[in-house]
Image (cartoon, rainbow, N blue to C red; front, side, top):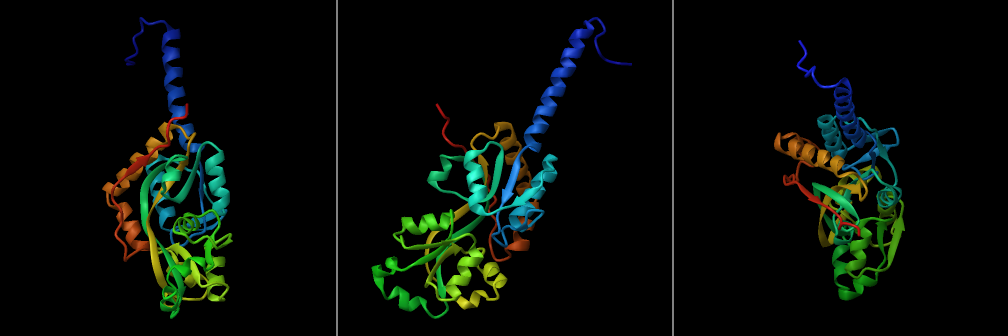
Length: 269
């Protein structure tokens, strides 16, 4: 027996039904229409346009499993993904380093990883570079284009930058002695070096420039309902232990960040 109040006009029932359906499908549309982008930055994320892998990729897929989102993850150059993040609605780019400037431009949900922005050189060269004192800031520094690593180097007084499209290219240039300093996130250095035929023993740190929290970044015009769904799903996988399991699989020597923070850009007038 139906529990619908048969004394109400059929038009009232129909309108209620349509309203419920619209709310459901609008919510589903918010989740499904999100464009999900990442970059080649192993072991955090890597792959090609049709297949993405890595620590943060597994985190995003775990969130998708919680929310029912089935959008494909596209691997694109960071500069391209970052431009889409700034210019288009409904874009998720991961991972993005948190900074005061970026907090004003996008929604940040995380952190999903913590790294250290570090200057590296070839093994055996650090002492010589440090002996130069402040003159070290005049040396050329390799960094990949549009990255927070390049931005941080500039803020620390290293303005002579050599930029390339990927960290693999920059690492190769360091090992080929094109320059003596390479700025990168500590969590990815071993993987980058392995991919170009070297190991972490072939480089050494010169100095740590800053600590870096890495986030899921949503474009400013992404619906609040979409971001809320992702935030709650991230909170859920951190609570049930699946986030820590993924983190330790890929970064066994690192401590997973267990808090969940949502930073929103200022409301536009």
